[in-house]
Length: 350
Length: 259
Image (cartoon, rainbow over all chains, first blue to last red; front, side, top):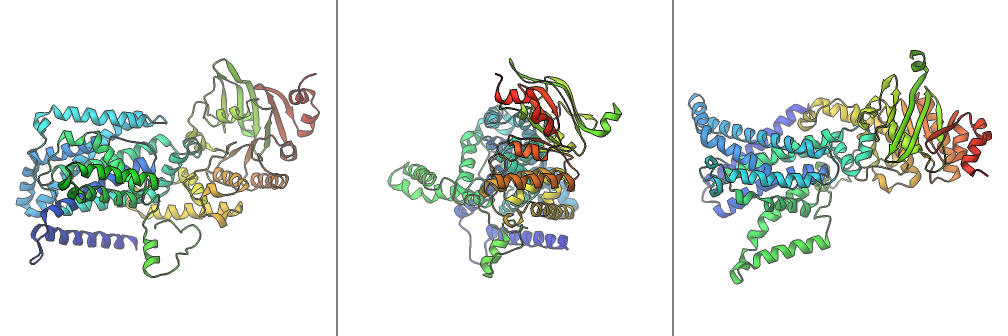
């Protein structure tokens, strides 16, 4: 019963994304999408992946990580390195035996998988020692880790060093960006609504009581952290292989990590919907404010900062708080049925 | 050794716990038999909660050993001990604030689920079956505690007495053999305390539990406990039935102070 419906959803989603991707790349009739807007939309997708994945560890598990840019760098450089040095060969090999589209997709999947694995491994190495402890150790360690990664990359000529990975081949497109954003949302949502998600909430709420309820808090925190890192690695892989968007150590410093934190705090920490909304707003806002720069260069960032400050004063819990957009909520709105379920189902997205 | 292990579920053997220069528990030896309603009392600062924290692995023992159901548990981690079958409530209520009443109980069933994280992420049949089972069992438990009508409310919005009952329900959700109650009647009025006594007795019978209870409310302790252990300054000073304890001169001295 459940499996066909799931397959149907995956098939339908893929078809929609493929169709939109066609419009993005080749236009539709006379309509051609403005490349500037296309770029912003693509960046929204990548930032949604980053924000929702960070929300898993910062929002759901309540462990403060400020090194998301580091995992993005590990995954991004690994994925891009593979594409540059081996991806073409793989695509050509698969392309000659099957067809070019399959070859290209295979190369992308392998590239992103390697990026995710490398970031997950880094997450494991960072997470195991620092998540055994309670408190703010994770923040310190992740901050240090991301700086170490940045300095390391600066000194590796094969990936461009300080000039950035400009040899990258732009194989990222609309389809992959939004397919991965959807995967990230579904993965984090499924974790959040399961008893595993409840276990993370117990850790966030009261770690001593969580242990007393038989929850291996270290294991749960590390698992959540590793998945979060892997998804950040995917976002890095997508970002580094986007047209005219080479990875650069300067852009992957702690300011980038803070930017992702601001996204989830703005949207409402702990809420997946909030992280998505926050990522969208913080990608669009700096662009939308560009007109300010025409009168006063630099005014844009002042307005941007001011808006964030006002937001935190008047709505410290973020735009959505912990609220989630769920199918049952959508259903109750669309068909105007009262959202009354049997006890225990309300508020849980099934 | 085997003979003792059969009838006694929990054995504390000469356990000492020191915090720097302070000895909170001193060569304490206790036996809790299966199915007992066992009270642990003592004046403020006597070390009762320390004993609970030693039993649940929050603290490591300095000396001595603790056996539960025949196996050593001192040195084990709190979550491992809970898995072996010891559940507890807290003196200062520790519910999970972000979760509803039902989710608090469901979270405590998490340790008995067999699904992996991959099952949850992929939404497999096993995941859905176990989530349904967990929800059903948790709702049944809530019903027993008369909390099913508030299942979807935030746990911290409940009145105090209900929060105490929810903590017990949550502890029971872990399928314990031994239930440790840390001052369950604290802050309750006489009627609530009376109802609680009945509830505790009923739980022991219905769930085939062994209950170890720390309590300041002497009416509750004397009313339901079959055996009472008194400690003072971390040392055992008396053991017996409630009636014997009430007549014991050392106990009276500990509580009222020596003349």
